[in-house]
Image (cartoon, rainbow, N blue to C red; front, top):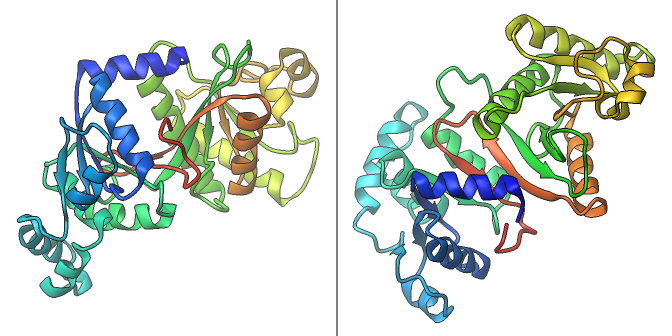
Amino acid sequence: MSAFLDTMIAQAKADKKTIVLPEGNDIRTLRAAEKILADGIADVVVLGDPDAIAEAGCDLGGARIVDPLTSELREPYAERLAELRAKKGMTFEQALELMDNELYFGMMMVKEGAADGLVSGACHSTGDVLRPALQILKTAPGAQMVSSFFVMNVPDCDLGANGTFLFSDCGLEVQPDAERLAQIAINAEAAWRSLMGEVEPAVAMLSHSSYGSAKNDDADKVVRATALVKELAPAMLVDGELQLDAALVPGVAKSKSPGSPVGGRANILIFPNLDAGNIGYKLVQRLAKAEAYGPILQGIAAPVNDLSRGCSAED
């Protein structure tokens, strides 16, 4: 287990929260719940058929098991959802039908304070998770958009923060324009500060170009995004456009981006689009044997985290 994960678990135990796991029909979710309860990391609500969950054979004695199809909360939650979505024309009958969906039911538990956060995605797409989150919980005050990040822990690595990096956006924004790319960088820097404590964030806006070495629309987008970040968040330590090696390796930075305040020391890597980000994190995970934590969603009014459908119980 990494030092990063040790720190996160210690923080969770010290301020224990209630997390709802909607995918109680998935054995990975049940095994994870068993481990979470055994280690005292969080209190857990598992959604699903109690008989089917019991047949799985996991020790969930400390969990609250709720079946959305039979729960006494169905009608109150449907009434509340219809109120929330009244301007969109949602009726009580439509809201009640949505309570059959464990993700909508789980989001309502978070909305109404029965849980502090939600983790899903083992057998749902990111869109399936994000849609009810935005409809019910909405964006956080001041948030311009929802984006995602991974925390990457690379073994035997002295780059970044002793091998720890934040990659964004690797799971959500397909082709952000300069304005949205700037917001992704600002969100990522705030996430780093909330997770990493005293380690100073250093944000690299990545491209195939460093300091104008290539002239095209894609590189120019990153240049404009960097300028916007500096305008919107002047206290941030950010630079771009930078190639990956210029962002990470001091010797290369001296050659490709002389004088850069971030070159050779970046620990937050902002990718220009989802292709680059998703491929990049998976390359590091698979080839460098890195631990990848995420995608973690940021910008939602309450904690909602999305798993990969290829996740393990340990994830």
